[in-house]
Length: 228
Length: 99
Image (tube, rainbow over all chains, first blue to last red; front, side, top):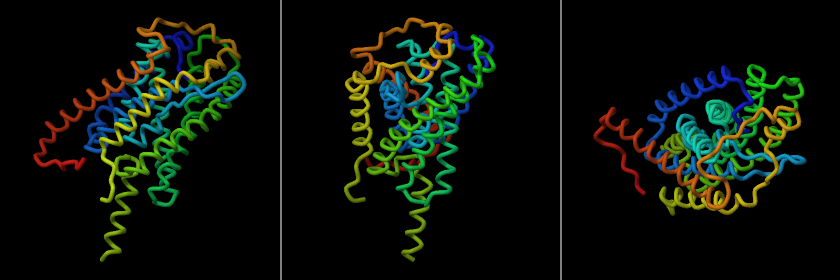
């Protein structure tokens, strides 16, 4: 969903640039709380994995491909603030080194594929955790649900940005249907990759997964009570 | 804890997977346009997009180069953020990680 230069007008690009800057500022403060001996080693891995996986376009419909965005994955593994910083670095490197995503659209891309997927992903993940049984085995399914929802929501936010500052006048109804339709399919791929990645780490070291902490804490308490 | 995999093993194993994905598997990725690109072509606003020159061209080893650059930036950022946190909190006893 990398937006190139020229899709959105200057005021919209400036506005998303401000949103991205504020988001990164908040994340820098939040990450200092999240980064402990468990999350810190994982942050580099998460960013590298998201960068690598964003190169893996999978076919979704006739003549169309999609790739992982990764915000839900990053938020669950290292926390939403650290996750957003990881995403921002990925988009910065893609934009400057590989011209993937426009320079004036960097703020748009960080907002759209970083802030939106991290915030929506983290909210859906916490919501799913509240509903699902409090077990470590439920962390990966909750992360998959978060990933599934995050992609079409990001595509809706793109449509909203396009409605505000799209440079070519096109019917917005058709744009919405097309964007949400294809990104719902991409969301299924996003959910599968997120399930596998989060599930793999939860299987070997659930304590390293930021999103598993509450469940692990609850489990420890239960064990202590039953021992008594 | 019984047979606990070390943090180092998890991180190095994960990085190995990521580098193989970026360096090898990426060559087999679909070359069809992605969701937004296709929609922009179908709905007549693809022409508004302008391409700038990147410092590196995608292809060959570029995936590996990008992955290593991303890893380096995040590693440095995490180190700086944690150093600041440590000075601000100035907590003398931190739980040592048994890796």
